[in-house]
Amino acid sequence: MLCYSAQGSSGESVIGRQFGCEVENSSLCRCGKETVRSSLTLLFTMHYPEQNKTIKEYDFAEILRKSICLEQSTQACSTEEAEGASLYDLVVTVPHILDARTGGNLVAHIKVGETYHVRKEGVTHQQWYLFNDFLIEPIDKAEAAQFDVNWKVPAILYYAKRNYHNKYDLRIKNPIEASVLLTEASLARKQRKSHATFIPLMVSEMPQAGDLVGLDAEFVTLNQEEAELRSDGTKSTIKPSQMSVARITCVRGQGPNEGVPFIDDYISTQEQVVDYLTQYSGIKPGDLDAKISSKHLTTLKSTYLKLRFLIDTGVRFVGHGLQKDFRVINLLVLKDQVIDTVYLFHMPRKRMISLRFLAWYFLDLNIQGETHDSIEDARTALALYRKYLELCCGGGNDEVRKVLKGLYEKGRKLDWKVPDCDIGDGQGSPKSTAVFPSVMGQ
Image (cartoon, rainbow, N blue to C red; front, side, top):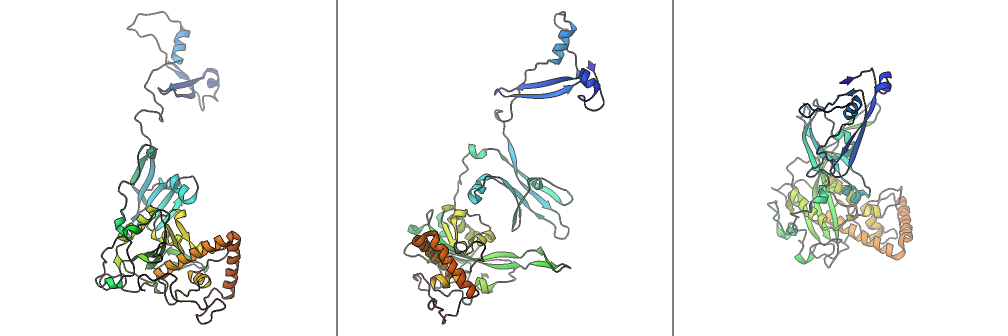
């Protein structure tokens, strides 16, 4: 054996420069891919002929050459081409966050692929997200796989086979069936059919991709916001308020029964409601209690299945503030499936306009007088969308900009408050009747 040693890097030492040998390790895969790695070595093992064979004369130069230029035949394979080999990527981590006061809780880090971002945001990238109860926010990939047993203990690590979507059929095998939209029994003991506020869809009315559906959601508060006032006068939020969906209304967007609701679900909850937000939601104490409610009361799962069916079908939802509603409901809807009137009638760098003011200005309607009603709001959003299409067809973008400019001027003059019904203010006396025919006799 020939052995040389030197302090520091072999290439920088005197011995390394004098006696070092640059060695190339070349691996040729069965697939034809060659991998070459270079290194500087000062250590060689002398290879002599095997003694159990006929002894043959070798000079030292030949022995040294064979010792340095080794040849091996192994079953080497490149990672990408190895037959039967599979590559897995980390896509989900679920750590347990330790907290001596509450016992801790589980959070999830989920890697969302390009498909979602292309459809939702029109960009091609992958991103890790933190899911902590109702909180969802993007995080760095290092945070997803970084653990500390003192407070962040890994509970689940989920790996997915790379390129599995190219090799397997990932279409939903058991899609939600249209039967979820059919009549269901109410959880409320006192609810009567004569008090029904909606008419379920008939088979001939089942929604198709591209159909319009007017939607409105109302919410209640389960936990109030916890905040503290700093010494400098600023407020620091310790725990945000927790909202829960309390009512979901869907109305037909076309056909002879346009504007007639086919879903009007009140969501039963076992948790304590600290604020019904009646002025804004129209939900009153007792409406969500199965023992005393007279509403069509359902479970959250039942209503979610209906919405998920409509989303998967590809309908287009029309409403006011829908993007925010879907965020709180926590359902993923493609961007092109949401028609939000709060953005249709909005000018850049200007304030958002309430549904009530838009209804008064464009439709001559006086809505939300004392409280909100989700059926009325969903119908009004549909009518506003029809009005927007009418403006676009009448004069295109120039006409829309002209109308919006007049809208904002009028709003500033009135301080964005709807005048009393008997004033008219040149707009005529706002009507309180619905803009849609009342098929249900409401």
